[in-house]
Image (cartoon, rainbow, N blue to C red; front, side, top):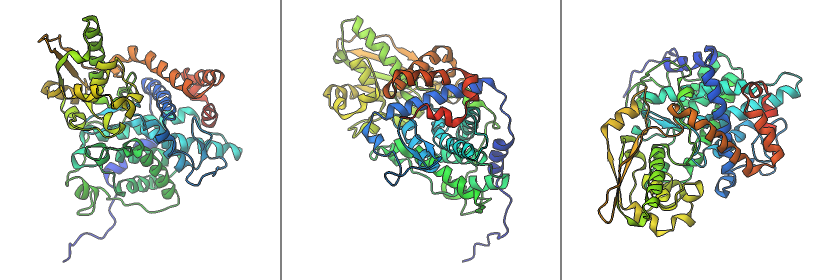
Length: 483
């Protein structure tokens, strides 16, 4: 039966051209965006360095063919690897996402815009080394910061009004699209070629969220963004050869993304592309916890101190009520067995129970040796989550963007402790002055995990001063992280 679809080649979808015009033409004049991007850079790299302490992450790193070394290739921070930009992007992307400790963006869709750094840094490093080898000028770290701001903006602005999780797709589709656009620009592609590249990102089959949810929660959620940003490098390189694109990849009747994967609905946009997302991005500073639980963990730490002052422990607790927002209930409200670290760091009950028991929450607390403590599951069973509609509204309010949680503890003797409320986590824009010194301290701690004191000092000298960092050639900055 004929579908009578038009056969003429259409003009590119508006969503594609808006993205491409932004990466080609928009001039970022926000110093706040560049300052925040520098903090984002060091925090993201620090998260990757901490992940190197975990064998489950390290086993995925390196070249596809063992022993391969690519002349003028991109180097992987904290390792001896020098790889082609596609594989380097996977390595860097997997490292920075492994512990769920890099930045976050929360809206209709959730995600981690610094996931794009894997492809951005790998491509910029490779291009710089190649340029220097040919006697040309390298890219600078300001170019990297600019690409980061634009990738954050593309991913975050699409996420503001469009929920991919509601149709079962993972948010890393937006990493792939954003990375493809900015990397294609870095590679010097023409406007038409960048449109082609971005269309190729949308036409890919997109990842299912099943690896983030029971009963299939697993470690792919820790390398999915590395996979997406490395795929972006690959697609941009394919487009650079002159490979054709698919102009109505989103809107084509029956076969386009909207009809196949988005229930026939077109994307909605709250604002044009600028620098809003980087300026308002959320940092995970104190705790490697899924972001919807960050304020709950802060509340739990306060309650731990209260219990200690009263001469009580978590074993004296009868019930805990968490007043929260709808996204928290959808993603991390879990009962029953938790099968692995990836399962545990997406369970708000686990992330509250550990600090109430031990007065801490670290990446190591999700590992099996800690999780087997029976007191954790006993306390988890006493935790009840309820939605506060006002918290849900404030979560979506563009002027607030709160991630509120409130904890009430009732003791076995009937005593009810005063509710502890935290609306904005330490990494929120509203707490920048409080948070940035702690973020810098987090970076120093992560550097010390991998490098000797002299190398730490060199990295800090280059990283903590905005003009120094921005002027530095990319390959020289990356070389500071080589082991």
